Image (tube, rainbow, N blue to C red; front, side, top):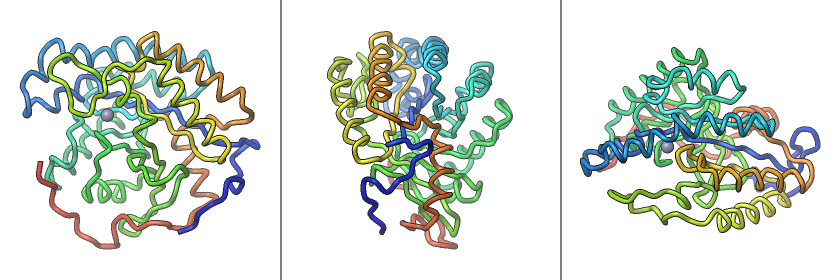
Length: 300
Ligand SMILES: [Zn+2]
């Protein structure tokens, strides 16, 4: 394992660190995927909470990003692309990167190997059909990955995954003999942890409706540390949460702050992955050895 020092990464254009803004466009499916656990997750009210993402927040976020000349990565659930094809195409036309986020947002740990393969293949096909783009990046629903996920990514020659949390710099993994760049994030930089909320039913990992000032304080200090260390600032956001005005105004201040520190490289996750592969192609971790058979699904 190569541990890189703080000044060793020559980010493009003399930047001190890389900044990746990503949006997981889950829509209602982040809720309805839990209907088996509680039918109330499929209620009209809960679904409307999720629909706020594609129907109200995402267009607003596209304007927001355009005004600030930032291109983001959008991890798109296949059923959202199917339901809102115009929106999916608009996201792509605005220069944002479309990445794979499963078909219906079912946690792969709750699916068999065959179910995962079928789900991921259908999402892959939907994204290609609707946007004309072959997805090269992936983030797993609930960031939960199984061997079946790695297998699928290797077979379809994905460039990167962004579901793990081991480091604050990208690193190259080997999956069945293929290279896959991991672009790590952390829950601390995931808005769901801070803002995810529903009256009923709730999810056990929600911390409630945080003040955007508290989150700004946390994210600003994380950025400051990452900037000084020359690493990757990977922010994971969900339009149905971040699209509220108070939070978007906070995000605007955060972007202003990152730019005020000095040169930073705003890039899509695919751009960061390509850069990393070009400069640091050596494999640092083996996720799945060559010719390994995927394990069966974990118990749900
Ligand atoms: Zn998601």
